[in-house]
Image 1 (spheres, rainbow, N blue to C red):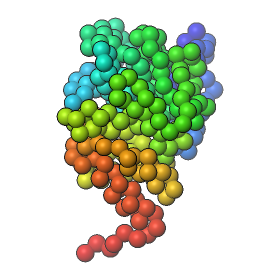
Image 2: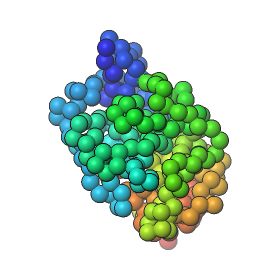
Image 3: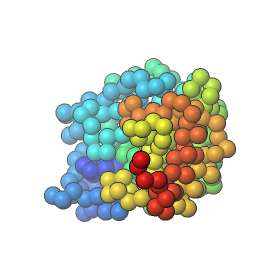
Length: 273
C-alpha cells in the first residue's frame, strides 16, 4: 500500500494499492489539472532527486524543497515555549530534517492555512507525535484522514504560548492565518500562507479566490478578511514562499490593500496620470 501524492498540488492521499482516480483539490476551480492530465508520485520517488532545506527566512526558520515541488510553498518553524509550531507544510520529510528540527525543540503542533498546503501533514504529525490543527470548514478537503488531525471551530483558536489561529475565510471557507505577537521584535507578525498574498510591491498585499486561474475574490470576502485582521497588531507579514515578507506596517498594508481591491472590483481605480 502506498500514500500517493498528487504531482500538481502535492496533497498526500490515504494508502492504496494504486493511484486515486482523480484529485478533488486539483479539480476544484481554485486549482487545476494539467493539460496533459493528472499525474501521481510518492515521497520516496521525490526524495530521489529533491532535497529538503532548512534556512533562515526573516526571523524564522523556513522548511522547503529544492528544486520546488508542485505549488512550491515553504513551511515555517514558529517558536512556542520549549518547542515549535510548524506553520503550513510540505510533502517531504527525511531523517536529517527531522533530526535538525528535534535539535531546535521538535514540534508541539502543526497548523495549516488552507487545503493547498495540507500536503504531507499526516506523515509529519506521525514523525513528531503532534496534532495537526485544521479549520472544520475545510474538512471535506482532507485526503488522508487520520486521528492526528484535530478540527477546530469558530473564529480563533489559541495555540501554545501567545500564538493564535485566526479564521479569515477568503481563498477557502476555513482560510486561516497565524498571529505571532512576539514577531518583529515584539511588534507582531502575521503568517498568512496565501490567504493574504505577499506581492512584489511590498506596500500592498492581494487576495484571490484562485491564484493560478486568476479568479478574483468577492468584495464581501475581502472585507471579511480585513475585519478579522483589523483588531490585531502586526508589523510584518510572512507569505507562503521564500523571502515573501512585508517588513513594515503590515496591518496598515492589509487594510489599505483591501480598500484598493474593492475599488478595483467596482471599477473605481483612478486612471494613470
